Image (cartoon, rainbow, N blue to C red):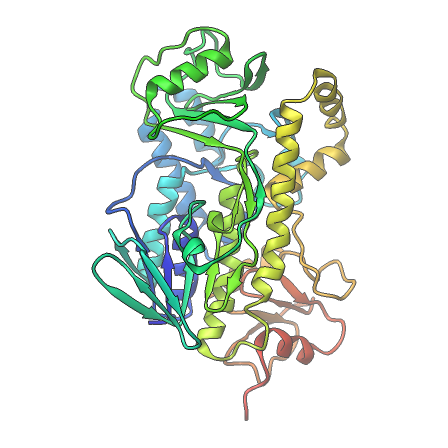
Length: 467
């Protein structure tokens, strides 16, 4: 076996699909016997949707998301009409609960939030990964990890598996991270949040109005979810109960609240903020929440993890195939860890702003009326401002591939347009184009016509094959 992935959440399943796309023998181990069906994250931001476009998955995910909402909210025709019209959730973007982010200011062909709950996303990605040849084993909990120079042995309750590499995609309480000895420094929690997925438009005696601040904390009220946050962290029993969530909502709302129906999902979490150091120890790597945890401000966590999977997949496949140039696998950590650090930084800033003085909150809201400020924050939340530092001072290099070229990356191979890839045909596809460009499998441009393309091909995809 080539690669073992611990965790069958969206990150682990997307990584499995990316590896299977390159004919890597990969198995996903998931401790739960079956998917929970809980909605959790509500959708994909622009950069993640652009990444799904690379593999031709946008239509599938859009349809799965629409179906989930239609099944769950048949009694809300106005919500469903908006969702059918655009494929995006009809919710405004926000920063620290200030609902002023304008999607129309972003340079993307996928503005807004592609509405698909995490449960539907997992189901779609599981099918995608299995279709490509990945194996998914449920009811398999990782209990032990041993690595040596040649590979990794993973022990479950009833068996042991051996592979060249192990990737922990097993969430914020990652067993792989702990067993492999990764450091996980960060900041202790300062707030506690409670969430319930329940039809709530009249729950508070008024229509759903998104984010607001109250003397007791902050609230997010949508047609299908309520989320409240309080300052401070107090001991609580596990698991969270409906009565506990009702009490928290009542405290923050300033009035007694009793749910009129059983919530589809409830949760409790804090804003604990931690970042793994490093992302790779020998033959063990981390991705998604196993590598970084933070407050879910702006819905950035899922999207951050999906980008981890896109970045790591082709590099790990290259290492397994034997053509990875020296240091390629280490670029996963050097590229992705700073991105996560910036997300952790902005989520902590959002928490401070959300619970800050009214004057600070009001002045920041005024600043968001400035297009330059609004665009900057929107790009930060959606990830569309991400570019890697690949060296040359060229606006194309390090940026995401333009939309017209994305269909060229369906098979997960790098693409060179407007130039010759002789010597690399076994690893690199070519396509005609007026603008010379070399694009990595994860969609980032590494060359745009300046300097010898052979140097860049060697740097990223190894030396040319012998003729």
